Length: 149
Image 1 (cartoon, rainbow, N blue to C red):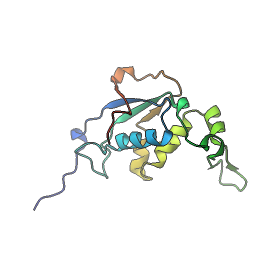
Image 2 (image 1 turned 180 degrees about the horizontal axis):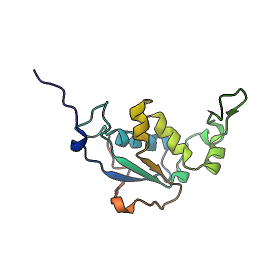
Image 3 (image 1 turned 30 degrees about the vertical axis):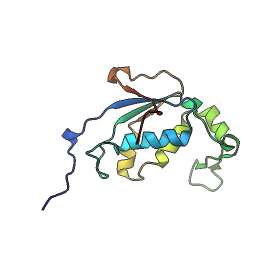
């Protein structure tokens, strides 16, 4: 009888990837990022173990929203638990005030809503411009046109 293999923390090798968000649809970008963060492309993938990689997103302010989403999409959030605390800015308002939040909310929506999902979230680094402080990790630049997942 064979037993299911579960990857041990010492067996997991984590890589760093840089993804450029310029003129890429936010859904396509975030689905690729979510797969990298969870490690779904690795042969040692297990849904109950964090075996994913680190992802750095640059130029997040230049992501593309298709159709009329720039003017019509609403991001709902509550500031407190009190009645009347609902905030509902449009996508263009969110982009103007917090340019990285469009990518972050799309990716976080595709991750598990558990303790493991909250741990996976910490491996995503999103920057509005082209500069990032993670050169020491020697990240691999990923072209979304060549990634097959």
